[in-house]
Image (tube, rainbow, N blue to C red):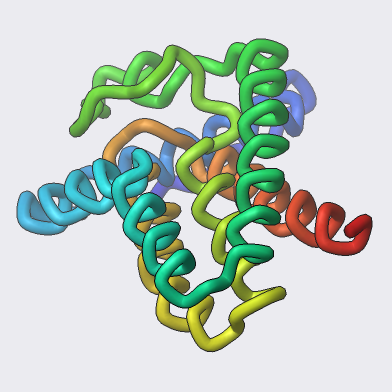
Length: 178
């Protein structure tokens, strides 16, 4: 990866964006077709299917208070996600660079923040607050969801970072208030 030159005419935001884009290009171009196919499956599961199965598991375990808190957390995450997407209107990496391709269809137009990462981290954080043993088992999937978003050309690393921060903060705030 080429270092981004610093000059007075290039703002820190411009340098950050250039770095963000270069990481996306590097991640996609250095990944194998097999890895991208695997990440496409993870991404599809992260659309909700994995979380549905997890919810059924929580019902089976009788963890109704955890499930109820999860519904609240996910609802707040969805609201936050939609407001930020509309407010920032940041184009997705594949729409900015001809070097990138969307390896799976995007669910909406904008990239900031990563909704998949936000929800995965929020669900995992809520589990950690209630059922830490289960959160440990879900954590690898959460990490794969986050990584998949960059490799698949759908998000910048800073989108994933923002989704992670929100995904940690929202459930902790909800849990503290309850």
